[in-house]
Figure 1 (tube, helix red, strand yellow):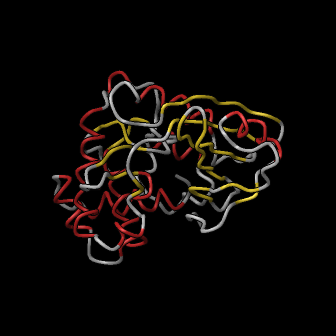
Figure 2 (cartoon, rainbow, N blue to C red):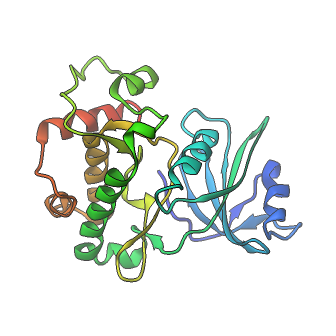
Length: 249
């Protein structure tokens, strides 16, 4: 499970020199982390000569392709507030991605989880902005059903035929609530974790986004999210894309 850790997290040895370049003490054994996930990835928060930065570290794992994230972030930065990539590299033990911090806080910070009446509509509007802004014709990245089925790690035999595409957009690829930043007024100030960005039906994002509302805010918020986004519920597409998510996003 992904989470925001309360205590400093041990620094992986292969990324120590990288962290020192961005403000970590040479003898630091643990540092504050903004996020850790179930497959060993850690996002460290640092303040130093380059300002506030995040350093994402990933051990070798198919689900943590930081090279893909770096390329997609650089592409999307022409149109939206996404992490500005300062450095990316790989080694035999994993990979790292350093980016400049964006303003705002994650939409699942305690203050926003306590105010779903503000956060949930803000998330719906943010995802609509994402979909309306990025140009499909210029996007070199794919996140279609065939692309995802070819990379699925679970049993796809029960999925059935995909529904017809309702609207083709550049999807975020992991439109779960933690990947949206909100400013103090509840306006989206940034989009993060773009490793799955690619062209697909917008319901691929909408299904994941509304599914994660329950995890972060509890039951009963899906209609408010969809209303803020500006679309009516679509149970068929939602069901299909959630099932596809379960076999490998």
